[in-house]
Length: 539
Ligand code: G1P
Ligand code: ZN
Figure 1 (cartoon, rainbow, N blue to C red):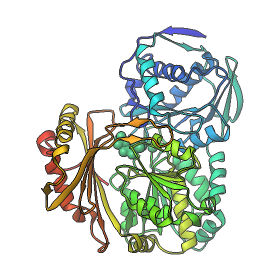
Figure 2 (figure 1 turned 180 degrees about the vertical axis):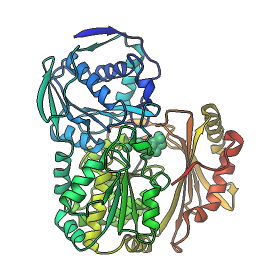
Figure 3 (figure 1 turned 45 degrees about the horizontal axis):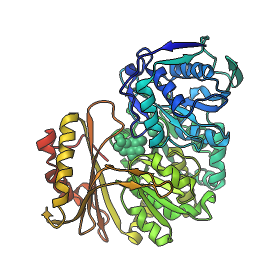
Figure 4 (figure 1 turned 180 degrees about the horizontal axis):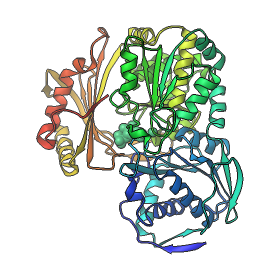
């Protein structure tokens, strides 16, 4: 074991989901090591502890895993459970942390950001409950990282992570496990695999775009292997370090190949895609796109059809910018609905306390209390289970849902690569204007309230402020604006737009939301501050 003198880094502040930087930033001497030591220090050391370790397989995953193993050994960890090849999807890692009752885990991923030497890399720590470290812990990591003077590492050759089984490194056990097995077993406890298998046997067709990312082996084993979907159901199923040049973000813009097929003449019955680390999902029916907010609402309304949720839901939770569609289902079911800040870490306490069973975000994240991360394939299997029981098309299920609850027209507009100072100025000016907005009219809409969202965790009482500007209108429409906390360059402005309709469910969301969109531009003076007139990505 050697102790290496390091220089502290002052930019290791975890964002919405761990520390994300350009890959070559992580590859600088001592950079990764510095943050790993900061994690260890922030959680009170790892002596005698057992950790899970794995990543989404992107460029530098293999090197980083070896470094982290040697550092864990040097700091006295008892054992590290690693996915074969150093790979684990984020939900599978969360599951392993819980199943094996470990002290937590390190996940290497920049989620849906592109991968490669010139793209993005990331690292985060999940607690013993399987969920992302809460703000108090990520803040401690940041503090540690910025004052660190040294880190410990064991000098040894690389460990072979290709073969399953147990080895050791400097007295620490290293167990290499199959990446898929435990996760697939968990899915079988939640969903009716026989019913889904019968549906596929009856000719049901599906396309799952794994986007050359981590879900490929999971989807192939579960959908084609265990559920009997036709060979070729899973496309881009081989994970690649640069995701084959794809931007592994499952939305209509980046999963356009899948969208084209689903909107085309020979579309399969059902389409889905997942992201770099397997925690996001996009769901598409033949000829119809399902917005993530609607997907959450449909899953909540139909969850009882899946055996793992047959008892009903304790409650539902959504991030504040997510549409209120699921709230209407909660009212109907007579269960609690929680509204949290953006980021999965805010769901952890609600899930641990048994207050919420299903959670979701508008950013293609859905999950439940089976793990403490959002889970892409889980959402796809939940949909398949519902389709197998209801024996209706996705379009019919959505139409029936809107007929019962009304439709929350919804869209998110992203302005990417905006100058950070300009974006901060814009948000600052918008925040200053909030107090004077209620009662005023814009684009024929009357503003009823305007604030900066603050959240008090109902379980531990912790307060998170400045979580996004909300402008609410008298007719129930809403604008939310915030800056992304996951980017690695400049700023990304996210504008979330919503309008509730009790009739007329077949409109194009952009058209239905036109006046809300214009109001957002006027209120925030987006063009004046950023020079942008049009968003880069619309979901
Ligand atoms: C984005 C999403 C957010 C999600 C996070 C991690 O964060 O908007 O809902 O939890 O990625 O997947 P943002 O870039 O907006 O901070
Ligand atoms: Zn992800």
